[in-house]
Length: 318
Image 1 (cartoon, rainbow, N blue to C red):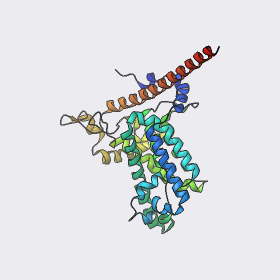
Image 2: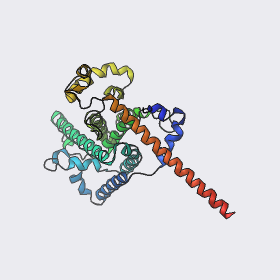
Image 3: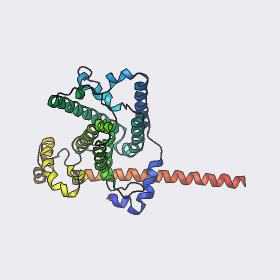
Image 4: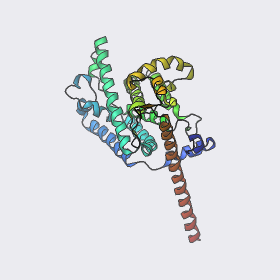
């Protein structure tokens, strides 16, 4: 029987081992995506007119529909590309070993394009409501939506792991990031432009992980675990208000109610229903914790090996 995540990563080792996870090598895929982000930023710096073809400009999306894809990888500011690359490298090396490279790149692609589509629809709707052409012609871009999605992935895989040097559990990262984005939008004009990307990136990534992510080892998809419900993004006193509203969208996306799942024992015609296996969801969390523990063990082994070589060299010199 698999050990629960809390016993896999003891609370007493949270800060010391959590700090080590941020010090290892980065995955090849994350390095490649970082090069892409940097290259597009440099291209924009050298050829400023490229923004009209690469950024999301709602008035030009038809016929330039490719900007629904390219906009998510285009950072217009230097600090934006630096933050995006740092987050991609450090968070990616936590998620990619658990999901696998194929699922990792699929997650990025799906969340990016869904976020851009939602922003496009929102901009068009705001234009018809306000008649302000700024909603149609303002270039929108950034990797914020995918970074927000990464935080949701961390919430799903290692929710009870604590941040290094902080007594803050990983499951609250998406909510804190969203709250900070909303607060910053009141004082910083640039933050207002990025706020829809953060909101839609968070929500679209949750929908994908909750209902659509397919598990290669089973025929199931999604994560029906109650610890990953939509209301868990909010404080407990708000959950009685959020749950009834969230259940409406749950029925729309799943095509069934929780009651029917319970009464049919999570089966339909003798086959497991898609997205209806809480045991598998729990196993995935354990795999995430196991992958994290293996990475920490490998880094400890490498550290001890290097220390042994240094001692041997020192003895030889003496």
